[in-house]
Length: 178
Image (cartoon, rainbow, N blue to C red; front, side):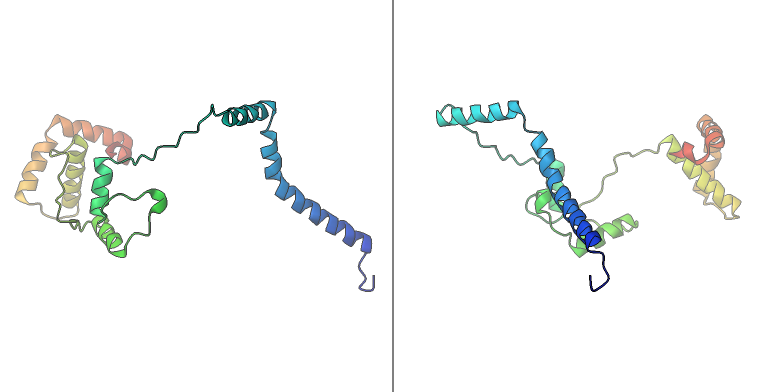
């Protein structure tokens, strides 16, 4: 009262803050309490009675580690003896991060001396068309092509595949190259 505060307003504000705190902290309890009904209570009673009578035995859950050749290869590439569960994973070493960054930048460096085997040994029609577009871009930029590339481009431009890819590209643009 000496500070010029309204005592009734102060008491009301304190009560509102207390009520908000109680409401916030009991919301989870109320949600859980709604999950308890006559069926859950009866099930709990029956389980307890069966356990007392020795007719109910809880089985231990088996701990099965799931591994595949891919998981084992990834663990070996990371320099680990065995795979690590996600919850046990630790921070990736800086050297491994640097190797991954170098690989993504195009400067592939083999991990553990392994070599990469291409899954597809031939180009797809879309890859050939992208290659042709790149060579055409070089020509448009005034650059001279290597003889081998120029011969390939001339033969490819005369093909039905090139004409079909060109038509689709003109209709749909870059989306056709995906």
